[in-house]
Length: 450
Ligand code: HAM
Image (cartoon, rainbow, N blue to C red; front, top):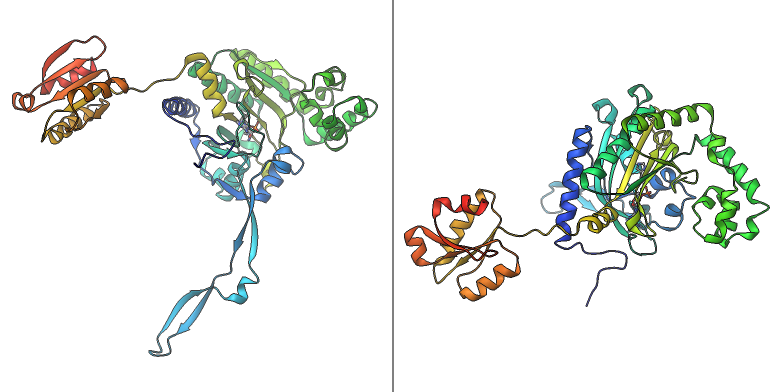
């Protein structure tokens, strides 16, 4: 038996109904804030993530699904037929060319921000007024699978990008995005979310902060876990992510990034907080929230949820002023965005609401030879008036039809026999109450909708 690959999974009904519900609510909310959908390719050139997300991050250094893709040089050769002398163009790959096959390195996207910013630059979306974009789709990271952590997972994300003149750098954008997220989670019925907020400053602020951390870690790092000892040298910021209990008291004594922010970043952060307070979105400042991707500047945030266990971040995001230039944009295009882990969001919903079971309204049971066509006609009529109908088969005995209707949770069973067809009146049984009534054809829809 061939099973699904470790870290991937099949999403099955009835859970898929919950996924569809989530996606339809988020699309409505995104619409209200004037976001439009973008779909970028599942794989991109490796360089995009290496440059965008950062070579030193866990994602790029050890979690990417990267493969090399040969690009044989295809030559268009003018070919002259020896018999007719006619000329045609032929596609040929010559053996000699195969020796020069170029390899390109491609990667399954581990996240979607770099792809969206690439598309924004490539298609000059700014000129078309497209600077608020959202996406829903699979991402891939070779992480150690556990509850809430998969190798293929799904993100629902949104990005606001644009030249500074469009207001994309304003703290109002940060606050609006966070307010939208609070609205989204509330509308989905996710209770007890917690917004963790921080500012990671400009890239030069972070260089100064990294230096300070490195200095502060020097005398204490030997008392810390192996990972922290390594990070203290290579990437001190990552020490703040450490979850090892014994290291926590040491980490608490380390310098805080806020004290290394320049005045402009401090002011920006104050304004984000002030707007959030004015719209009534609660948040907590988390000095240790530095996020695992290199492109972040200033505002960084995560929404966590208690029911999720160790992988408790439902979503994460932040500002990334400078990313567009890094990816080749001729003009600066500051931006901010987030990605929700859809797998985790659905899990949180299941904790609070359970599955949304999707059941048919009616099971149509054709009874006896020749009744499939009559039942098909009826099914078409009913489905036309938005009734969810499941169709049986004329070879089934009545008992089997009842059993099937019961198993799939249909509310009604509709019997389609020769007599009913002649009389244009059908037996409709409510499977919950047991009540059975004869209903004229024209009133069936109304009766089932009740
Ligand atoms: P991220 O924090 O790497 O950010 O991922 C965002 C969310 O995706 C996480 O909070 C989590 O819910 C979910 N997630 C990440 N990895 C996994 C996994 N292996 N299994 C299940 N869920 C996972 C980003 O990806 C940024 N691109 C977000 C962003 C958008 N920043 C600015 N714009």
